[in-house]
Length: 311
Image (cartoon, rainbow, N blue to C red; front, side, top):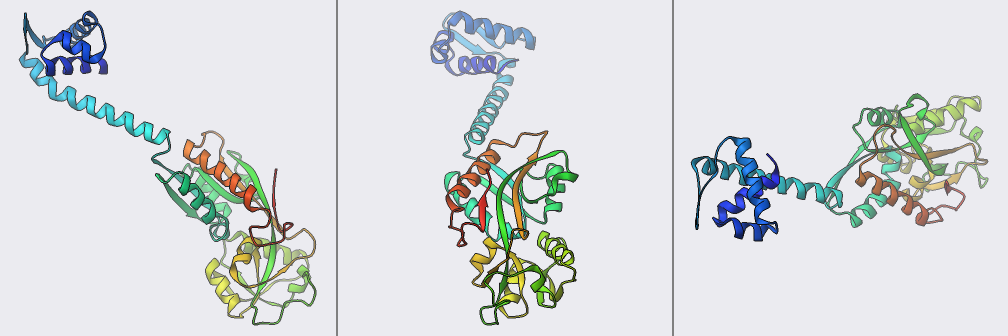
């Protein structure tokens, strides 16, 4: 049983005329009659009483007609739904991103994407890079914005590096600056009261490792906060914090850049190798790249060297 056979049958049932049905369907009348005969043979019953000038449904035809109409309606709905998704009028994208990126880069990208594709549902999963890699590997995300290097433990994923971002020291404008120099050294953080993120944040691990490499353990006055809490604690003068440049630029806090190029991070967009991202996710990735090209050169509110788009 094929859809076009059911369509032919339903049209003849509605018009009670083979020739008129063929005209409406834009097919040759012999072809239409042949297909209905094939349908009757498959079902093992006549569907029409055929008499010159009088076409009527048999009991089998009466039983089939509402089912045929439902099947055809369902097929049309399926076609329309798929077309809407294919043409990006409907659908969804599941994006993972670290908390710092959700507080800086992601909102502008999603606004730009939503303006272009308002029918696409956006689902954001916020977490650390390691957690996002596990979630992406499990197929629960389409894309993930992560901090590299982290993919060595996830060979099933592929990543494209997008942006290199400098980390900076943020302090309260009401407090003395953390250094009298224009730039600060990691060693200058020794014995300085610091506000630190909760465990699981990439920034916590990065900052702690940098301090240990410089020969000391960081001193925390407050720890365990999320991004908004850390910004609030710094603003209240409880300590300084190491932040991504894009977040610090929006915070209203005093920004002191690091000397050298060791305190920086690379942002990448990752996806599974074995499953091509859906079209909506590919379009989000495109919008992401376009946004970076227009925004990286100063629109983050930082010197051009602080955020650098990668080829």
